Each structure stands twice: as structure tokens, then as C-alpha cells.
Image (tube, rainbow, N blue to C red; front, side, top):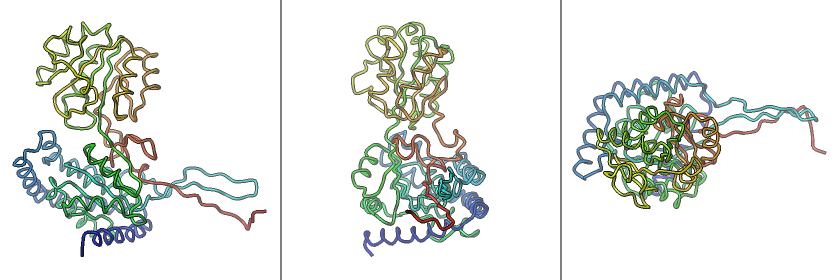
Length: 418
């Protein structure tokens, strides 16, 4: 069987599984999810062994530190996956819920009801935890899922998928409801996203190059998660200690993720006081600061920022810094260079808060909090399928509701249209 035929078979099996999934009630699905979590727990050592194979190979191939961090599975990260599965089991099932209901003058009752999307293809890089998170969310919403991870995590992904499936089958997981594509051939991605009639939606998670490639090749709908070029704006009316604490957290707590801070905008009225404090704090974390002319006039040790810095998702300990004349200048900068991911304002001004939240065109906008909270788990979703920078049909962290669509159910008593 060649790759084309193999992918058609995979899609066909997923379509059949999706029809079986829609028949499962919430209680049954939750029981299977708990069994999947048990499967992960029982195979923890095997997963760590598989991850070590991937890590050793990645280091030999010179994978960047940020990517190595994404690839690594510690005991804590595996435990987090297990907790995530159990958390998804505890969440309200959106499938079958009524979005709205109304009755027409002729007596027809119309119900708008949530239903699964069907078959979802997930294409992702580096992070093995995506295997567990996406499988759990798709299953909870009665969607069959086809997983295609990156070659750098092939052993880890396979070990996680096998543990999930083995655990789930014990409690009635439908065959082929969760499938992992094990070939590292890049053509598999192209074949997957061209399975019209078999796969309903593709969700790529990874670098911008991957997402653009998927979008260009796809014949099915794609929800995009482009780069996370996140900003924080320190307003003239900011609490400066709060601003410093949030900035350090957003940049340094985990710099290699999409919700980490990349560009800091500082109002000119507080720049002379704030920027030296920032430089001292960032020096402790070995953060390289790249400033515009005004920022470098205050902290000469900053490197000179060039035009490309404002559009750069560093994913490492580098922070670009710009002094702005007003909140409007900050908003204009974010809307020009940002990726519509996550952006924050630090201020005590009610007017500044209102203007920022209304005018910044991003999926997630923060007031006096770190952008690092843009995460399905932190939002109470249990886990996330991704963070959409699109506007249709989902935006921001995608949880259970975002993995459903809807249908209209119309009930009558013999009405006919005249």
C-alpha cells in the first residue's frame, strides 16, 4: 500500500469511528478518558524512555534550546498530561447542548444544537504533550482525530498514543477513533490535508513555516495558529512594580512558548524611571535587550533594535523595547507588527484600559496580567487544541466548544410550506 492509499484508509477509518463516537453518551466518554489517563500513568517509564531517544537524537542534530525544551518530557510534564485528561473528563460536554430555541408563527420549533465537527487532523511539532491534549479534547467532543507529530518527537508521540489507545480500548474506545501517523514522510501531511470528504478540519500547531505550508496545500478548512508575537505596554499610569513583575514573568518564565513576551512598549513619561529597573531585572535572567533610540538613550547597554526586531518572535531570552509617546502609539504598533495572539496593558487608568481592549485587534487582551496565561488549562478548559489567530470559526485558546459545530433540528406537527 502506497502513502496515498494508506492515508485514504486512515481517513476512511476515522470517518467510521466518528459515526460510532456520536453514539457515546457523556458518562461513557468520561469513563474512557479516565482509562486513557490510567494508560498514560501505567506507561510512564516507557514514555520517558521513548522521550530520551528523541532528546538524544535532537541534541545530536543541533535542535535549538527552545525546541529542546518543548520536546522534553519530565515527570512533572507527564503528570500534567495525566491531570489534563482527568480534567477534560470533568468538564461539561458541549455535544448535544442547545445553543438556542424558538418557535415560528406556524408552530415549527427550531433548535440550534451543538454537534461534533467529525474528523479532525492535527499537525504539530516538537511538543509530545499535544498528542494527549488533542486526543482528549477531540474524543470528549465525539470527534475522531488523526495525529501527525514532527519527526523529532516520533518515539514520544508513538508511546503516548499507544498508552492512550490501550487504556481507552479497555473501556470501549471505538477502534480508530485516535490514530497517529507514524511515517515521517512530509508527503503524509499533504495527503492528510487533501482528504476532502473524509477529514473535516485541519489544525496545524507549530512554526509559521509549517502552518503556511499546511494552508497552501490544504483542500479542507484550516484553523491557523501563526506565531505568537506578544506585546506588553507599560502605560504612564502603571504601577511600576507590578509592571516589572509582569514583564519578567511574561519574558522569562518560559521564553520558548507562543504566549511569551517579545516586545515591550513603554510610555515616555515613565521610561526614565522604569527602563533602568527593567535592565537590572533582565540582567539576572541573561535577557538580551534590543532598544530603539529613545530606550538606548536611557539604557545605553541595550543593543540597537532594527526594523525586523519589531516583527520577530524570538522564542528565546531576547526582548525588544520601544518608547512610545502615547497609548495610541502603542496600539498602532501592536496592530501593525503583532500576530493577533496575546497583548497586555499595565495601567491604573480606566480610559487607557478601555481604549486598549477596544482597539487592539488580538484574540486575547490582558489588563494588568501576564500574557503567559493564554493557555487552555489556565482558562479552565482542561487543555487546549491550539490558540487560533484566525477569526473564524474559533479565536484564541480552543477548548471543547470550539471543537463543535451546530445543526438545526426542526420539529413540526404536519406543517407544509405554502
